[in-house]
Length: 184
Image (cartoon, rainbow, N blue to C red):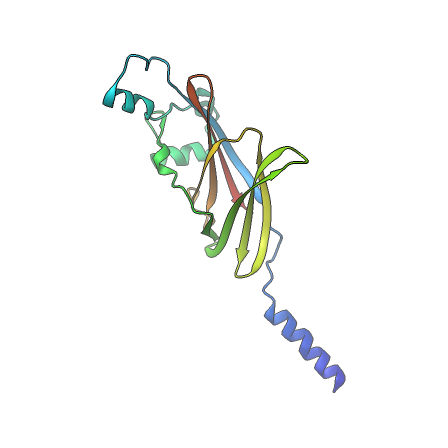
């Protein structure tokens, strides 16, 4: 009877624990750098100035040359149109949002943290299913930029990509860094 109870407890434990078949990590799939210059705006006013300052940045020539898979997805979805980035296609996500992982919805939270000892700024990205943490990863950067996190499934594999679009101002223009991640 004692052995029977132990076997039942072991079976119940395995049934009640949802396990993921492998460990997951947030992998970088692609990255892009581009810039919007403000040279030539000193004589503009009103709507002309507004349009100039908010125009779509040009695609960097090196990105066109590399012809990555994601570049082709961006063109197909008109995120890149006429060699310009349509940044409005990157929606700003809240701190907690749903994420498709192999066609299953999980929750993602993104928290800012600063490690004084290491003098680094980070975004902590945590993927959870119910109360179980699937994985936690850190996206580090050196200069504190404005950042927009967005998600899309451009490669149509059933798992969303996470897009981190960093923007910072430097010498009469905005610099952008777009990094594409996916939970694998």
